[in-house]
Amino acid sequence: MKQLTYILISLLTTFCVAQNEALFEKANTLYNEGKYAEAIDNYRAILETEKHSADLYYNLANAHYKLNNIAPSIYYYEKALLLNPNDTEIKNNMAFAKNMTIDAIEVVPDAGFSKLLNTATNKMSFDAWAKTAVGLVFCFVVLFLVYYFAYSTLNKRLAFKGSITAFILVFVTLAFAFHKYNLDKNDNPAIVFSHESKVKSNPNSRSEESFRLHEGTKVQVIETYNDWKKIKLSDDKTGWVVSDDIKLLKDF
Image 1 (cartoon, rainbow, N blue to C red):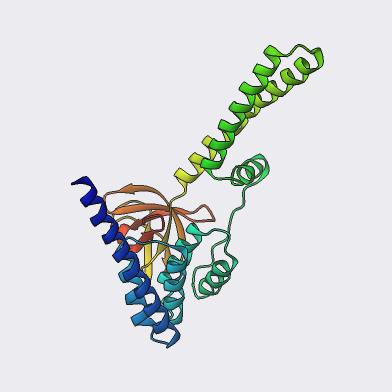
Image 2: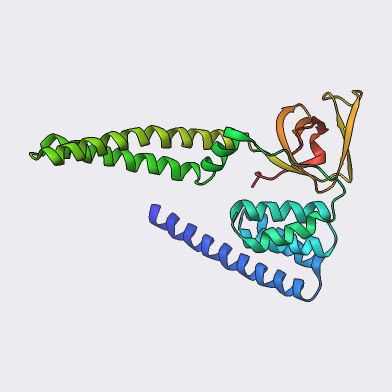
């Protein structure tokens, strides 16, 4: 019975993959023919099967860009970049899309030690830092065993120094790993989809209006209260917007 279930699942998976590939090719053909709205429908049909890829989001963003859909194009470029952060073509096309936005928001850069720490931490992912720490633990154990069983004074000295270095680096890499985890946890970007969103000082419609944002602007969500999201801009301004005015980028 289990074997039959496995075969059925395998067949279903193969069918879904083949169907998605056919939809992707069809969508690409429609895009090349200038039928961008129809191409979008086919790309979105693939998304409904919970198939996610940088290429899919990139093509979907391109189709929206051709139709001058500011928010969706930037949204899907950003999602493509999350899956393939080093792709220069995605970055270049997103820069063109962002030129269509209205809001000009300055970026407040990190300074001093905070900048150095964040730059170093972002050199690797959380998983990479964790794996490095595990590797260093293994090195420490091996070097300690060499120190313990070695007869030569020189070998003992070198193994002891190496094991101490590895031991210290374990804690350094663990510190980077936890810092990376916190950075990723607090990174909750979203794109404004409303043509014009009124940012309030408090999470209710009767509160004072702080400023306004327009479609395509990227924000950070730092808090949720009922149907409101507290957002933070790259210039450190904060305020509350209706949840429906924005779409979270990390929702896959």
